[in-house]
Length: 104
Image (cartoon, rainbow, N blue to C red; front, side, top):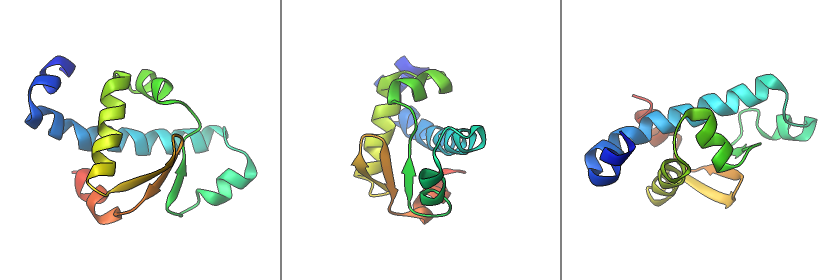
């Protein structure tokens, strides 16, 4: 599937919403597991900043994707102005409406 996505832009485009949804579920999963400290919990409660408590490689492993696919998806979301990257582990939501449409 990933090889096909690398060759076919339409397949890759269809994978973006799935990956965005998985990233959202990952954030929720990490919050539930209590992997963040109290300040991070407060910062992530309904705000526009998302602190990723794991690396892109760990996210890829957790989602069963390659790090390239995760990085490509994040880069595309940034290019589309849906998100901004404050740091490698801090994502700023820029366009919630667009992200909501990606959820299907």
